[in-house]
Amino acid sequence: MGRIKGDLRERSFQFAVAIVKLVDGFPHGTKGWTIGKQVLRSGTAVGANIFEADHSMTDADFAHECSIARKEASETQYWLQLCCETGLASSDCTSTLIDEASELTRILGAIVRTTQEYIARKNE
Image 1: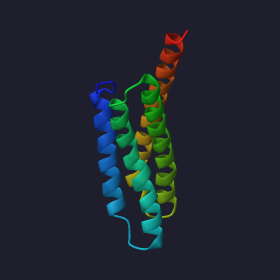
Image 2: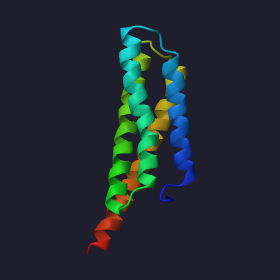
Image 3: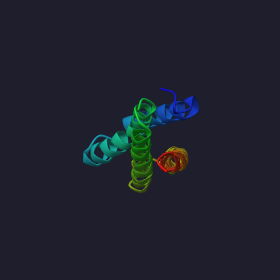
């Protein structure tokens, strides 16, 4: 434990909490259930994968878990945009979450690149 700074762990956890609260407000029905399930899955997976990366045994595993978290953050942006466009949530509700998902994607991308560069240098 300790590869991931506390701020990123906390941000990803709070992001998941906000996603759960957003989806909880979706109307009942096929649209709300189907899209809600997707945004809930991807949005909460970001933090879960960050926490898993923090406990990785190898540098390669760490980079892999962070890469998965980055993909989940990117996917969550798509689902949040769809929520807004389909009327499941207002742009007021989703814009902050989309911005945070975008920022998490960028941070995780930088972590993956840095770790992969470190692995490459170590293996020279």
